[in-house]
Image (tube, rainbow, N blue to C red; front, side, top):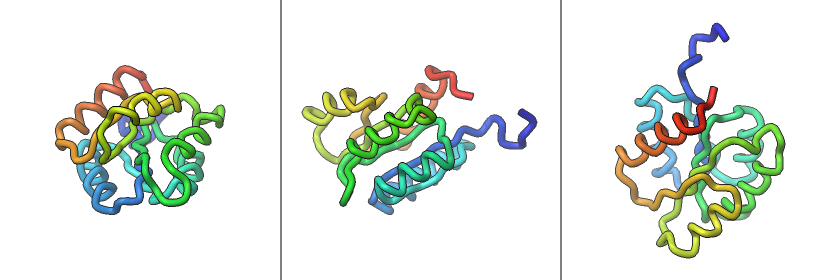
Length: 132
């Protein structure tokens, strides 16, 4: 791999809230990651297939296809099934957390979140998963 961006990790954000996607994009781009955004689950599945991200941030509540169904489609694709998915939700974590892990999520972040919380979560997951 002799690419210019070999150290940069590809991160996909799937969320219908433009303020959230803009914020996450800014934070993670500043950290040196290559960030892509999809504003709904259907586009998110397509973009995941195209971009092959190292990590996905997934909103739970989206119109049309929610984050659970979107995650299921991604996890059912052998080329994408190993990508860690961090769920985002403005709801209390209680009930969602169990479902997040049952659907194949790696972690859960409650909105609103601190910038450093996001950066630390990304570093921890990418280091733990030893993604290339």
